[in-house]
View 1 (spheres, rainbow, N blue to C red):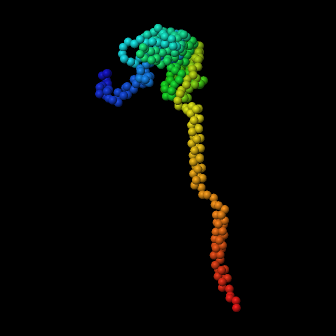
View 2 (cartoon, rainbow, N blue to C red):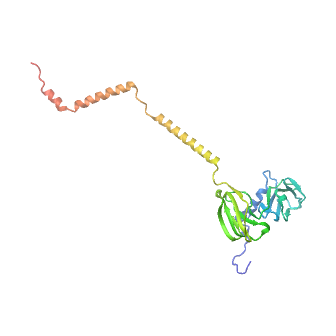
View 3 (cartoon, one colour):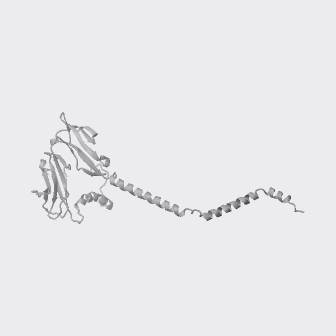
Length: 286
């Protein structure tokens, strides 16, 4: 600890339950792929550097991590299903060639096969390197414009669906902190080695999640149509059930008679003076 630091180290703070949970989280995330559904530990295979696509002559190291009881464990390596004469935890290829392309796995005598790691070796001047071709929404994605034998590279430009993303005079990695479905598509890069411009092959990247698929859109549409149909049917049933029934012919006749009588009475009572006048001029016959 430097003398200028004003903070003091506390063992009690280090072992606080909430802090211990946070400190264990990265370890648990790393350990999760190593635990099978049946509880048996399995080996985890990683690639260093992490790029699955490399150029001829590049150095590649595969590391086999086994999560089980300490001790010496003989590692078995497989390349495209065939055993390799390697028994160490790491397998280094100083200069890869086309024959090294394929899928790699590892295991011990007491663990099942590890995850599969794909290695793709190309012969070209320029290569756009990625860790993998499929990402989940929210993942971080790094692109690297890599030259043959790591020759000096300048005036580098990255492209996505033929649209320039970024240009720099010096070589650099293009990083997307959190990808979404809009980052799916084709990528490539260009750069100069000396005075000669080179173009990499296209790499197609897919980002899963986020935008609903066509199948999901169809399902949602069908559900909405069914719900609307049910609501319409219920409304029609309610309307018919509570609608006042029409009058029968007999009732219509009776109503007309009642209306006629009511009209006559109203007309008769509307002229009381005429009625009184008629009564006053009436004389009994002699």
